[in-house]
Length: 391
Image (cartoon, rainbow, N blue to C red; front, side, top):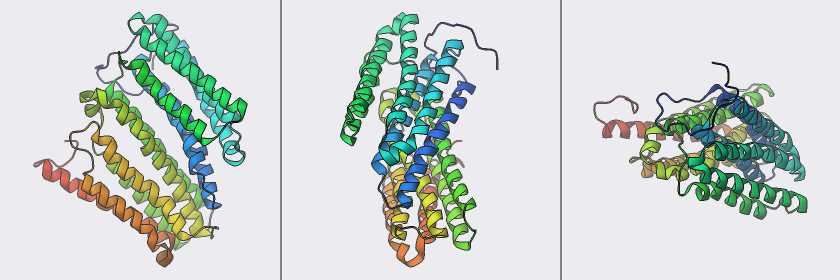
């Protein structure tokens, strides 16, 4: 990789740039989110294992992680200059991610959001400076850049007021989160930034891999901390098959060409991934709890543990149909296949009293494998003469 330019002009990159891929800096940036997602999933797993409902807190923390990652990703797709100021501001945002991750336990156990808020402000502060720089150095898109900088700045004041007044309720969070989601639409409704569709598709794919990897790591750590048994092997193997099946479904149709043809649908596609990503993170927590329940009994029922695995898996299957439908003429999953898969996955935990957690995990994995198989057959039937959806 060549040395960074000391200072370049921040101008939009071409949205049709050939062979555009994720940069080494973006890959390094993603590594900090591995820590943040792991912290959020671990706290969710601990809460579920203790019999507490931590879903609202998990979704709040995960939203801050996802939203900061998403804003950096779309900005980088349009304005990545890779000079020294850009790299240093990226490092600031990476530090914010780590601060946020350090504050997750306090937020989950004591509702103390000081570190989480500080980390979020660091991430968003770096983004504000990037937008200001884009406004100064790129007169053609100054209006869009200024609106982004102003919108983000105003909302950061809102987060500080929320923390200072102690109004850290779910309602205040939802209000501020909805306003955060509207900023890009408001700022770019007249002139879109020049994001690259294939680059964006790759970045989302890489984050999906990170979340799947977190689930594998969670199961591995849980297994390593307990005494090996036949039931434990079944849960671990079933979890691996389940994650592999979800990976197969997600990567069945690359999103780049769909985003290129339907740029106006990018908000629905991009925002819809919050549910997909949160479901994968929650699935990792559910599988970790399933391993713990199998090795030593937790103060929750097998059926509850089964739902901790089944609900995220079902949500992923359902949301994958909805998300891909926004940019593909033919969604990855057909509606009938998606509905059938969700129903069967939802029924699996009902068998927990008869076969325990291992049976539930195996059944959920089996349903996902069946969905994959049916989808592959449907793909082959609709594309005669091909042997692969990527051919």
